[in-house]
Image (cartoon, rainbow, N blue to C red; front, side, top):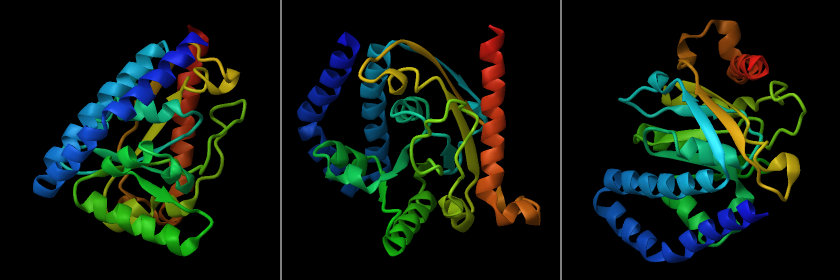
Length: 249
C-alpha cells in the first residue's frame, strides 16, 4: 500500500504544482511548437520516471534503433496496464501523443497535460467524432508528432499476454493516410505492477520492445487489406518470445 500512496502522491503533487508550467508551455507553443513539445516530453518523462521508480519497476528497453529519427511514426502496442503509458513515455525518443478513451478528457489537470502532450481522445461509439480524431492524428504525424495507439481498444485481461484481442483495423488509418511507418510495440510485465493485484503496487520486471518499422504501402495486397491483423500477429510473436525468455530464466 505504501507504494500506491507514494505513486498517487507524486502524481497529484506534480499536477498541482505544474499548473504555472502548463501556462508557460502553452505560451511557448504559440512561439515555438517544437520547443514546447520537447520541453513537455522532458517534464512528463521526468515525473513518470519517478512514478516508475516508486513502483519498484525494473525494465529493459529493446529495439530503439528501429525507430526512425527523421520522421514521426505510429506506435502500435498491446495494452494490459496503465503502466504501459508510463513505460511508453519514459522510453520514446521524441514527442508523442497517445490516443486515449474519451472519458479521460473529464479528469481535471491530467487531461490538460494530455492535451499539452498532443494526446487525442477517441470516442469509439461515435463514428463521426472518431473519424475527426483520426484525421487530427494524421495532421499531427504530418507535423512531426508521433502518435501511439492501443488497437485492442481497452486493457486486455486474458491470462496469456500473447492472446491479443482483435485489433480495430481503423486504428492504423493514421499510418495509411500519412504514410508514416508503424512501429509494433510489445510490452510484458506491466500488469504485474498493479492490475493483477489491485489495489497493491508490487515490483515487476518490464520488457518493452520496439519492433522493426512496417511500411503499409509496401505490404503484399493480402496484408495491406488487413494491416491491423498483420500487426497484431507480429506483436503477438514478439510477446511469445519475451515469455519464452522469462520462462528460461
